[in-house]
Length: 423
Image (cartoon, rainbow, N blue to C red; front, side, top):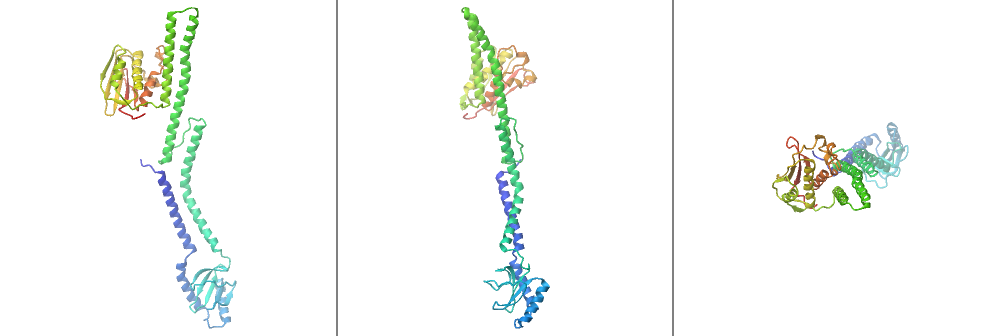
């Protein structure tokens, strides 16, 4: 779907605003300044007034009487000057001649304010004030025009700007809620531009953070519970050996310490993977050789298949294979098979056994730290093997899944890309 780019929205908003300014300016210019159109009208009016008034050679009283009659009929203030700019007659407020009169008819600004000047054919000048002396100052008219344009532009641009800023404000509130500790904070995703993509990224990040914090809380809670068992056994064993050295008890203590050390090692590795530690994923790894090394540690374990070298961390992939085999022998039944296959862009590792497999309701839960099925509570282990397998696979850009029972009764498959570059 085509996304509307934010810079295009801003650009189109500016263009629309400029178009609005032009249109309103043209309208207001047409209303307040019609010099060209009025020039022709003024010429026509000059001819009509010239014919309505006595000629320039008539007496002042005759011209005054005609001017008063014309002003009364039109209800305007009007002043008549001769060719020497001397006042002949006036009706109402006398409007003075402009200091710099260019001899053209039309609206002019004089000492008394704006007025309409008519230059008659015989050289006389008639100055009329249609507003009766109550017209607004030209500066006021200009301010009114600019104010109207500004209001029009503001009204046209406000919906666009407000739509953008409102989404940014909602995103800000979501970030503030997240910063205040509300890990469930999410924002609405509206539109298809950069702001919408930013909201999507925020929601995705917030979800990952919520899951990560929840996993860490569960990890700490379960770790504290699991650590108590070997520690209690060690404490009890120390108390029992106070009276003398018991070789069996000492061996049991060493075993408890080894279990405790292994548990702490797995917890630390999970924490490093959660924290996206800087593992070197650019090394060349021969999966077949790693698998052969791990399979050699078990009886009834068969390796088959081949694949080209991939990029990754050998130690992490070694742990992945070790956990898969340990899980198969601990929770399944021999013989165990390890099959490596090469696809166009990935390598798959399938570890199968002859056990009953994982129950349908537990197929996703087994990848949760410290989870053990109801039928596996008495089996040694802490439930960290498969969660580590998933974390290692995902750190390499791969994935892990329980093979459907229609395909195999008990098998786990890991898919890894050929290379991810430098980690």
